[in-house]
Amino acid sequence: MEKPFFELKDISKYFAKVIANKDVSFSVNRGEVLALLGENGAGKSTCMKILYGLYRADKGEIFKDGVPIIIKSPKDAMRYKVSMIQQHFSLVSAHTVTENIILGNVKGKINWEEESNRIQHLADKYGFSVDAKKKIKDLTVGEQQKVEILKALYLDANLLIMDEPTAVLTPQEIDNLMNFVKDYSKQGNAVIFITHKLKEVMSVANRIIVMRNGMVYGNVNKEDTDEIRLSKLMIENSIEELEKPKVDELKKEVCVSLKNICVKEDQEIPLLNNISFDIHKGEIFGVAGVSGNGQQELCMALCGAQKINSGSIYLNNKDISNLSIKDRIGLGMAYVPSDRHRYGLVMSMSLAENILLKTSYSKQWSKNGLIDKKKLKDTTNGILKDFRVKASGPFAIAKELSGGNQQKVIVGREVENCGDFIIFDQPTRGLDLGAINNVHSAILSEKEKGKAILLVSTELSEIFTLCDRVAVFYKGEIQGIYNTSDLNSEKIGLLMAGYKNEGESING
Image (spheres, one colour):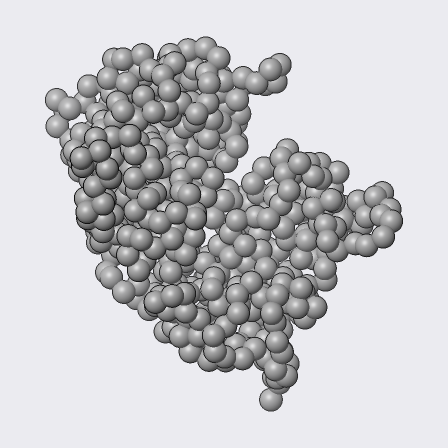
């Protein structure tokens, strides 16, 4: 009988009192796409980081072709032709595609033209539309992910670990990635695909490992299962049915109003051009579009991090266009950013400190001139409980949590501090089914309280499920504003691609 290509046997890993992996055993074969499925904090990424040498297992062994191997670092992993594409890219934005790919992999005098041609040939071979001479900062998120894959292909990897690879991609980019994964495995390579999206699992995987609480709960062939069975294996808590609450029409006064907003850097094309719309109290206003079409700039302009060149922003009839971020927070504006590491958390701080940071100047945390630690601890514990955050407690360090649990902490903090208006920018990116359900429940709860909500999402299912109206963005402009009930996937897809029908949209 043929030995597995790679095998993990009885792998255990502990972080302080938290069990990340306990006696995890599974294998992957040549020519196979193995999906690693589980909720946030289930231990998927941890055991793959052990295989890639980023972590050392406290117990267990790794085998290649039946022979035990020792992987102490990524350098060791690369020697065994193992490569990993992580959720958060490790690219130097000021350098070119070529410079990023050869960084640390080429010694001596470099023939730049030769290396650039080699990488361009590799990109063309796999159908990646990436210019090897372009700088990373000038690429879209989807293109940056292709660069990460090219790094692995450049090193001739034959086991590719992909951690939540579709979290930041558009539907079209996801299709292209799936085709690449299938073609790559057919060439005798192996792929371990870490995800929580059941649709992707059934689309690309040959076999599925289901993890929960750091342990393996299932090992099934795709043809022997379906999405319903997998979800039951994956999720401890049942998914509650969501129903969009009906909000009293009396609450429908305008809360937020944007009038002719423009954002432009120097002589470049406007990042936002003539953006106007209103958001009513008790309304979820969606913004749909392919990433990089002005959604981020819109959120930044609203929260005060991006200066607007012209136009006005009103919150409860007050002009806030020139107010600071602190002043806008003081007026009750909350913001869940799309990049949790860059804008949402200080990773080296505890969860309680991160809860405090946003409103540290507020009297709510003060007791005799000092921080009321008991109140802070109780508030943090409440957020951890309400949002089912897997953490050892309020003083756990943020970087010790899985990405999904970090996101739940941010959502909990912003909901806790929200006044009348809350911005959700990709709030469920990288979350599992249970966590998505939890966040959606929180969003609908805020709607029911009469809050005005801006929801930016590239997930069309999320837009259709939650939003009352939706504005479709393309190249910094609004293609139209529609009642969600008047749209379908085909129509919204055309709008996202630049098609515009002047007679169909409703007023903002």
